[in-house]
Length: 256
Length: 278
Ligand SMILES: Nc1ncnc2c1ncn2[C@@H]1O[C@H](COP(=O)(O)OP(=O)(O)OP(=O)(O)O)[C@@H](O)[C@H]1O
Ligand SMILES: [Mg+2]
Ligand SMILES: [Zn+2]
Image (cartoon, rainbow over all chains, first blue to last red):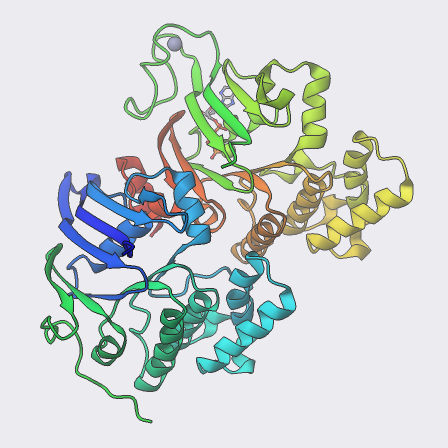
């Protein structure tokens, strides 16, 4: 049988030295080890400060790992250590197969919600017509109507911005998606909308590693759960195997 | 994978008589770029970096760190004290552009590179019309047909959102933001392979800055243009640059992917820079 492993995180460590605070050391990640299979949905949970975002940022190379390795099996079949690969290799992977979705939208001024969501498609070579109609469809599915679509997200509510952010991420899904709390500002109805989008991305074969606080979403999407505590992996297993009650909110079932 | 389009190695620019102490008595650890032994100003030393096609390299640092010096050397406004710069469009990258003769240097500036200066006065002739400024650059590149020149000028002014009815006006009477747009249009007009931006939005009102930045970003991504952008402003770097060099007192203290530099700065100076911007 083929090895379907896409990612192998081995003894990953991240120490941050704060030169301005008397060389204080912060151990954001310590000896983190786990594998991810191709197409898997892995949810990362943990209390605030436990290292969830640091983990995603190391995988994306926004943070430089200080120990261990992150072996990624690229679509070419080549094994690349994301912790030590060249900047050019990382940029290429970011362009072609690895996407990071921050918690909140960071967007350029003067761009409408529709522009923002269409841009990834335009940049990957789609006709503007197709890109814009696809962007509009996804925004509508996420409950962003046509009047909002043509205005500036900087004027939107937190939850609306977050849905634009999700729309931009799912409009052109990449092979590996790193999601940092894409549902934190959403009500139950909108969480379900996001859920449907993520489900589609998963069905399309993408591997997803995401930080979630939402028990309902976890239960319906996550194949496995990684529980972080003080920068270490405290538990890892299927969603039924690990005790997540401490880390996620009460179950809010979407009203529908 | 494609190699770099420009590869700069060990660039040093020293103003004054160099002495053997210049290198050790300046730099970020010493906290000055003036040599205590001989008084020379070491504008930059041992600066090395690669620029890849279609990518944007940011250079960030405080005033006097040597950022503009690096750009001026690449655009041949300034001759370096030493160093090499291999450029894909100059002798297939076999010989440094700093060994080029005068004619070759002029050709590089005319056909291969574009520069946008912080001060529009440096990039524009304010007493020639907006359209005339662009025509100057096209004429230097041997364009001859008046209609072509005029069409191209209006195309690029339109592209940089300068109202076409201002084409025959003098930039001296334009707002700072509009002067900067004309300068960008002029730099773009020859379709340069490498665009150099020196503080393209410094000195503009904040509201105007956003528009110029977004325009630059949009032109860069739609043309896949290769850019080096110098700024003391992290917001400019964040928006435009794929990779970033951090300079201080003439030396590169750190380089990396822009998001890494901003979110996980390694050097104490970069940590200071990022923290004071937040
Ligand atoms: N012609 C010159 N003669 C002497 N010193 C010079 C000369 N040109 C530049 N310098 C010095 O070299 C150093 C680097 O200057 P440079 O213009 O490259 O800085 P910069 O990083 O672009 O600064 P800014 O952010 O203020 O534009 C400064 O100390 C400057 O005063
Ligand atoms: Mg300068
Ligand atoms: Zn000296």
